[in-house]
Amino acid sequence: MTRKELFEQIKKKESFLCVGLDTDLSKIPPHLLDTKDPIFEFNKQIIDATADYCVAYKPNIAFYECLGAKGWESLQKTLEYIPKDIFTIADAKRGDIGNTSRMYAQAFFENMNFDSVTVAPYMGNDSVTPFLEFDNKWVILLALTSNQGGLDFQMHELTNGKRLFEEVLTKSQEWGSTDQLMYVVGATRAESLLDIRKYAPDHFLLVPGVGAQGGDLASVAKYGMNDHCGLLVNSSRGIIYASNGEDFDEQAQNAAQTLQQEMKVLLAEYLK
Amino acid sequence: MTRKELFEQIKKKESFLCVGLDTDLSKIPPHLLDTKDPIFEFNKQIIDATADYCVAYKPNIAFYECLGAKGWESLQKTLEYIPKDIFTIADAKRGDIGNTSRMYAQAFFENMNFDSVTVAPYMGNDSVTPFLEFDNKWVILLALTSNQGGLDFQMHELTNGKRLFEEVLTKSQEWGSTDQLMYVVGATRAESLLDIRKYAPDHFLLVPGVGAQGGDLASVAKYGMNDHCGLLVNSSRGIIYASNGEDFDEQAQNAAQTLQQEMKVLLAEYLK
Image 1 (cartoon, rainbow over the protein chains, first blue to last red):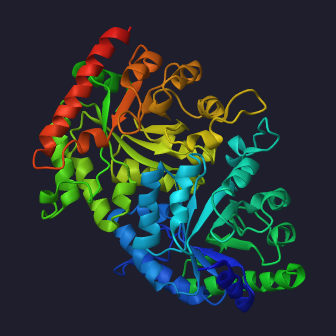
Image 2 (cartoon, rainbow over the protein chains, first blue to last red; image 1 turned 90 degrees about the vertical axis):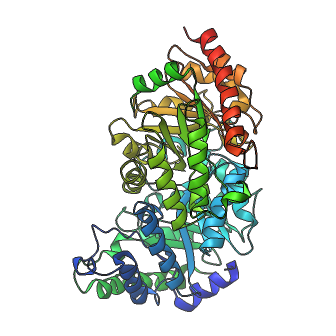
Image 3 (cartoon, rainbow over the protein chains, first blue to last red; image 1 turned 180 degrees about the vertical axis):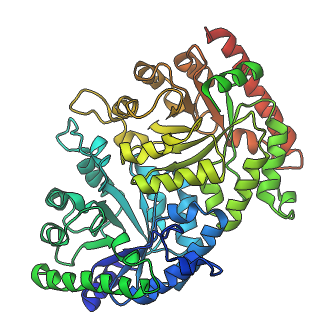
């Protein structure tokens, strides 16, 4: 999916919501556990319920990988089920030496046809660029993450005057354009979006951490939105586990719609 | 496997060799492609041929993941086939927020019973510690990697006087002991092992990059060995693709034995 197509979807749906498909057998409604593929069955119903209110889906790969071969099958089926006009993110946080990153890129972009994959920056240039060699595919690079440990290294100041995450933002722009590179920026530090926008005014940002992790949607929009929105805000648990009963899909729909309605107001306010 | 048991294996086999199982369908001998599971068949014969000369096996997970569900099955069978007295490394370079890292840990330590997994440090404390909660299991944290891009961020100097990889070495020692934490240090910068040993004198180091990536075994031993060896030196392509013919296992054995013989000499010279 191109940047323009993504922005069109955002305007059409009046939403910049990404739904995180962090599907966990221990958390899905018990009545689904008797189905042939409970993970896929859950995802399918969540997708049916929320597709009108979101512009992206983001399965975190750990939740599938921990189920072995069967998990990969559920993931593949889920990806094939997602409507083609919705942006897909493999939240994998991969990154390895060049020829190995290429195999990860192949896994997510060719075998599974994801639009994007999250990548960790620690190994630098040649661990990231193999993911950038695919047409209309995206790297979403970790910049400033929403977890407590994000402070351990990312906020460290370098002798060149930048903090590490700022160096990641700067350096990585030598590797790919705004049409193929986004950044992960945690919503728990919404004010940091001002710093991010100094270095990456035009990029799309994937913002996890709204909801269960404590981030605030209005602040994210205030500090982070640019003239083509430039935000994908993720919510996982707050939507997909809104209810543990037979009405889980209905409640997920309500939760997604509530966020979409807030987003509609924020788009009207901040989209220039 | 405990640190003591690993050292016992090193002394017994007079080897600190790790064989990288980076098994690629486009590189294995053509006569194996007709078998039911060519990846496992190749690994099985490589393991049979090299098990006497190495103390560890390291499948890089990308090579299996890019084959989807089938790849995970080949990986699982491979792991089950590796003799129990040989240390196993899931070279996965994972790392995510706490509850998600826990699922990766479960995937590699419980579902597949690997002894260790490589982890990327960018997300800090709570992305790493969930891997440290398993008895006799190891985190192998990326410190200074062997690829060109390793220079992009890892060598950056921080305002506290340390370079980023040195900060990773220092900070991470608050999270786990030398009995559960190793570091990845590329052999292409063997002299850097002196710097690493300043910060991590007692830790085991996993050193990839000997052979195809240009590292030099004698320098690695000279600068990196400590009083319990403290080194696992990985070779992948130089061993497993020593031949592309029907004699691939024999040639892999020769390549592994040649390295083991060099290691025997180096252990005699440097092990105090």
